Amino acid sequence: MTAPLLDLASARKRLVADMSGIVASTFAFGLVFGLSARAAGYSPLEAIASSVLVFAGSAQFAAAGLVAAGVGWPVIVVTTFFLNSRHLLYAAALRPSLATRRSTERAAMAHVLTDEAFALSMVHFRRLGRPDSRGYWLAAIGAVFIPWNVATIVGVVGGSRVADPTALGLDVVFPAAMAGIAVALIVGRRELVAVAAGIGVAVVVGLVGDPRIGILAGGLIGPLVGMAVPATPIEAGRDASGEPPIGDPMP
Amino acid sequence: MTVDLVGLAVLMAAVTYPSRALPLLVPGFERLPAPALTYLRLVGPAMLAALAAVSVLLDEEAGITFGIEAVAVLLCVGIVAWRRSLLPGLIVAVGLVALARAAGLV
Image 1: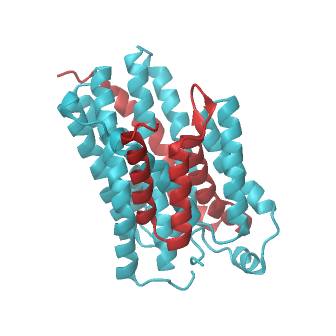
Image 2: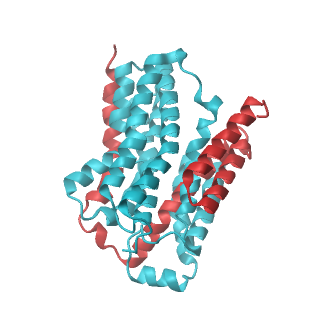
Image 3: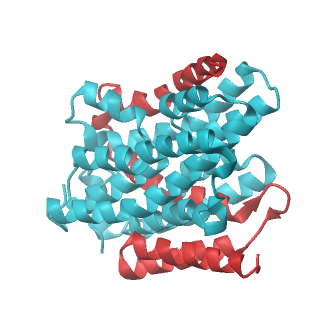
């Protein structure tokens, strides 16, 4: 592990500050999902079941659209599998950091693993110089699970009385947060190249095919391009030590 | 109140959970060779950047696009790189988009 940049209290304080923007974004998206589910004919119980059990925004949105269009369940289930397959990479990247936790805890952690939880906890672990399972839970539950589910209920029950969150610009929080956290994770030229290649591949594949496949392709191919770049002496030492993915302190 | 779609939610959860859980639960995953760990370290920034780029640069009808949302994201990236803190970047990004929409510019 690397030397910590911050002590535990300070790192968690920064985590909570980072979470505040994600909470607003998650609430806005959850609200829109609740409204979409209501429009698609979901009952409140069905919408809540989707948000609690599936807990994967893009797949839930896609399912609501497909249900509204009268598409059969098998197609929706297969679509869900492909949309959520990127979580495999997140879980793989987190595994070395969570290896010391009990398997039952890791099994529970898996259910709340989202784009946001992954991004927040990776940055938090790096600030701290070591993993922090409570930080993971805080990010996953506090920033995503609770706001998403509360907003789903508000949207599906409140219906037309709810204001449109896009008018407030809240729809930009998600891409801005993901991009900002990606920047915070860049600590060397390999990360920089991986990011640039990931963006290029995602956009090109998204243009000629499905944007969701583009995201997955960017996340898979970008790191390969990054690894092709000669390592700096610092990066070489880090790679040789087999350091876990949360490795480096911020510059 | 209908409950039919609860069954669909259960099926969707059943195909989602393995992607999230298998790498966290399969024994030996933490003893991967150094190149695999290097690859995994690069997955986070690459995947998150790809997510952000596709969200603001691709439009289902127009193809590639560069609107106020992309400007807001770039501004956020610049502020995060400068201040090493996410929140100020998000506030500026949201403020810019809200102002532009309120002014009828987009």
